[in-house]
Amino acid sequence: MKKLLLALALIALYACSETVETSEAENQEMEASIEKVSMNYYGDTIETTGAMTPQDFLAEMEGKDSLYTTLEATINETCKMKGCWMTVDMGNGEEMRVRFKDYGFFVPTEGVGGMNVIMEGVAFTDTLDVDYLKHLAEDAEKSPEEIAAITEPEISMNFEAVGVVITQ
Image 1 (cartoon, one colour):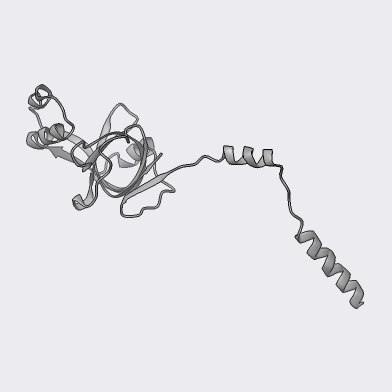
Image 2 (image 1 turned 120 degrees about the vertical axis):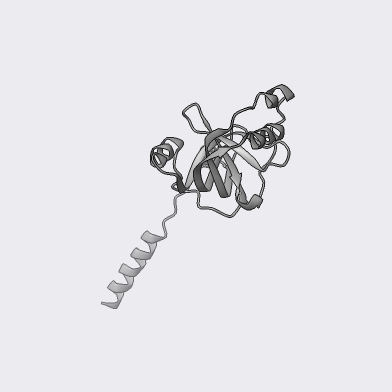
Protein backbone atom coordinates (compact mmCIF):
# COMPACT_ATOMS: atom_id res chain seq x y z
CA MET A 1 0.00 0.00 0.00
CA LYS A 2 2.87 2.37 0.88
CA LYS A 3 4.54 1.63 -2.44
CA LEU A 4 1.32 2.39 -4.30
CA LEU A 5 0.89 5.73 -2.50
CA LEU A 6 4.55 6.57 -3.11
CA ALA A 7 4.20 5.77 -6.81
CA LEU A 8 1.04 7.93 -7.11
CA ALA A 9 2.79 10.80 -5.31
CA LEU A 10 5.78 10.58 -7.66
CA ILE A 11 3.53 10.52 -10.72
CA ALA A 12 1.64 13.59 -9.43
CA LEU A 13 4.88 15.46 -8.76
CA TYR A 14 6.20 14.61 -12.20
CA ALA A 15 2.97 15.80 -13.85
CA CYS A 16 3.14 19.12 -11.97
CA SER A 17 6.79 19.68 -12.79
CA GLU A 18 6.44 19.50 -16.56
CA THR A 19 7.99 22.56 -18.21
CA VAL A 20 7.13 24.08 -21.52
CA GLU A 21 10.13 24.78 -23.68
CA THR A 22 10.00 27.37 -26.40
CA SER A 23 12.46 27.95 -29.16
CA GLU A 24 14.54 31.11 -29.41
CA ALA A 25 12.40 32.23 -32.38
CA GLU A 26 9.21 31.76 -30.34
CA ASN A 27 10.69 33.76 -27.45
CA GLN A 28 11.63 36.61 -29.79
CA GLU A 29 8.17 36.58 -31.34
CA MET A 30 6.50 36.76 -27.91
CA GLU A 31 8.77 39.63 -26.83
CA ALA A 32 8.05 41.54 -30.04
CA SER A 33 4.32 41.17 -29.54
CA ILE A 34 4.44 42.67 -26.04
CA GLU A 35 3.89 46.39 -26.34
CA LYS A 36 6.31 48.31 -24.17
CA VAL A 37 4.56 51.31 -22.63
CA SER A 38 6.40 53.97 -20.68
CA MET A 39 4.26 55.59 -17.99
CA ASN A 40 5.30 58.94 -16.52
CA TYR A 41 3.46 59.99 -13.34
CA TYR A 42 2.95 63.62 -12.32
CA GLY A 43 1.25 64.72 -9.09
CA ASP A 44 -0.42 62.03 -6.99
CA THR A 45 -0.06 58.41 -8.03
CA ILE A 46 -3.40 57.47 -9.56
CA GLU A 47 -5.11 54.26 -10.64
CA THR A 48 -4.98 53.97 -14.42
CA THR A 49 -7.50 51.17 -14.94
CA GLY A 50 -11.14 51.98 -15.53
CA ALA A 51 -10.59 55.48 -16.92
CA MET A 52 -13.48 56.89 -18.92
CA THR A 53 -13.22 57.74 -22.61
CA PRO A 54 -14.05 61.33 -23.59
CA GLN A 55 -17.36 60.15 -25.09
CA ASP A 56 -18.38 58.31 -21.90
CA PHE A 57 -17.23 61.26 -19.81
CA LEU A 58 -19.31 63.76 -21.80
CA ALA A 59 -22.40 61.56 -21.44
CA GLU A 60 -21.79 61.18 -17.69
CA MET A 61 -21.17 64.92 -17.24
CA GLU A 62 -24.36 65.96 -19.02
CA GLY A 63 -26.63 67.91 -16.68
CA LYS A 64 -24.01 68.10 -13.91
CA ASP A 65 -21.97 71.04 -12.64
CA SER A 66 -19.02 68.87 -11.67
CA LEU A 67 -17.83 65.27 -11.64
CA TYR A 68 -14.92 63.56 -9.87
CA THR A 69 -13.54 60.99 -12.30
CA THR A 70 -10.62 59.38 -14.04
CA LEU A 71 -10.44 60.28 -17.73
CA GLU A 72 -8.24 59.04 -20.57
CA ALA A 73 -7.68 61.40 -23.49
CA THR A 74 -5.10 62.69 -25.98
CA ILE A 75 -2.98 65.73 -25.16
CA ASN A 76 -3.36 68.61 -27.62
CA GLU A 77 -1.05 71.16 -26.01
CA THR A 78 0.78 72.00 -22.79
CA CYS A 79 1.84 75.32 -21.27
CA LYS A 80 5.10 76.21 -22.97
CA MET A 81 6.29 78.37 -20.04
CA LYS A 82 6.09 75.94 -17.07
CA GLY A 83 3.86 73.01 -17.97
CA CYS A 84 1.23 74.33 -15.56
CA TRP A 85 -1.76 73.38 -17.77
CA MET A 86 -2.64 71.28 -20.78
CA THR A 87 -5.53 70.84 -23.17
CA VAL A 88 -6.94 67.46 -24.16
CA ASP A 89 -8.99 66.34 -27.14
CA MET A 90 -12.58 65.55 -26.20
CA GLY A 91 -13.28 63.75 -29.48
CA ASN A 92 -16.16 66.04 -30.43
CA GLY A 93 -14.13 68.77 -32.07
CA GLU A 94 -13.61 70.49 -28.73
CA GLU A 95 -10.91 70.40 -26.12
CA MET A 96 -10.86 70.64 -22.34
CA ARG A 97 -8.38 72.66 -20.32
CA VAL A 98 -6.64 70.78 -17.50
CA ARG A 99 -5.07 72.54 -14.54
CA PHE A 100 -3.19 70.91 -11.68
CA LYS A 101 -4.45 70.99 -8.10
CA ASP A 102 -2.92 73.77 -6.02
CA TYR A 103 -0.36 74.41 -8.78
CA GLY A 104 1.31 71.41 -7.16
CA PHE A 105 2.93 69.78 -10.18
CA PHE A 106 3.77 70.39 -13.81
CA VAL A 107 3.92 68.35 -17.00
CA PRO A 108 6.53 68.60 -19.78
CA THR A 109 6.37 71.81 -21.81
CA GLU A 110 7.22 70.07 -25.09
CA GLY A 111 7.06 66.71 -26.77
CA VAL A 112 3.83 65.34 -25.30
CA GLY A 113 1.30 66.62 -27.84
CA GLY A 114 -0.56 63.66 -29.30
CA MET A 115 0.34 61.39 -26.39
CA ASN A 116 -2.18 59.57 -24.24
CA VAL A 117 -2.92 60.92 -20.75
CA ILE A 118 -4.88 59.44 -17.87
CA MET A 119 -5.93 61.98 -15.26
CA GLU A 120 -7.88 61.91 -12.04
CA GLY A 121 -9.67 64.88 -10.57
CA VAL A 122 -12.71 67.11 -10.81
CA ALA A 123 -14.29 68.19 -14.08
CA PHE A 124 -16.39 71.35 -13.94
CA THR A 125 -17.87 74.08 -16.09
CA ASP A 126 -16.24 77.46 -15.53
CA THR A 127 -16.25 80.96 -16.96
CA LEU A 128 -12.75 82.10 -17.88
CA ASP A 129 -12.39 85.88 -17.91
CA VAL A 130 -10.61 87.80 -20.67
CA ASP A 131 -7.47 88.53 -18.61
CA TYR A 132 -7.02 84.85 -17.75
CA LEU A 133 -7.62 83.81 -21.38
CA LYS A 134 -4.97 86.30 -22.50
CA HIS A 135 -2.58 84.93 -19.88
CA LEU A 136 -3.17 81.39 -21.20
CA ALA A 137 -2.56 82.60 -24.77
CA GLU A 138 0.74 84.17 -23.67
CA ASP A 139 1.73 80.87 -21.98
CA ALA A 140 0.96 79.10 -25.26
CA GLU A 141 3.21 81.59 -27.08
CA LYS A 142 0.39 82.92 -29.27
CA SER A 143 1.07 85.94 -31.45
CA PRO A 144 0.25 89.46 -30.21
CA GLU A 145 -2.57 89.58 -32.79
CA GLU A 146 -4.11 86.36 -31.47
CA ILE A 147 -3.89 87.64 -27.89
CA ALA A 148 -5.44 91.00 -28.82
CA ALA A 149 -8.34 89.18 -30.52
CA ILE A 150 -9.46 87.76 -27.15
CA THR A 151 -12.26 90.09 -26.09
CA GLU A 152 -14.97 87.86 -24.60
CA PRO A 153 -15.03 85.56 -21.57
CA GLU A 154 -15.32 81.85 -22.32
CA ILE A 155 -17.61 79.31 -20.69
CA SER A 156 -15.90 75.95 -20.98
CA MET A 157 -15.38 72.51 -19.50
CA ASN A 158 -12.31 72.40 -17.25
CA PHE A 159 -10.53 69.76 -15.21
CA GLU A 160 -8.52 70.10 -12.00
CA ALA A 161 -6.25 67.06 -11.82
CA VAL A 162 -4.72 65.62 -8.65
CA GLY A 163 -2.48 63.38 -10.73
CA VAL A 164 -1.80 62.49 -14.35
CA VAL A 165 -0.05 59.69 -16.17
CA ILE A 166 1.35 60.34 -19.63
CA THR A 167 1.93 57.17 -21.62
CA GLN A 168 4.32 56.81 -24.53
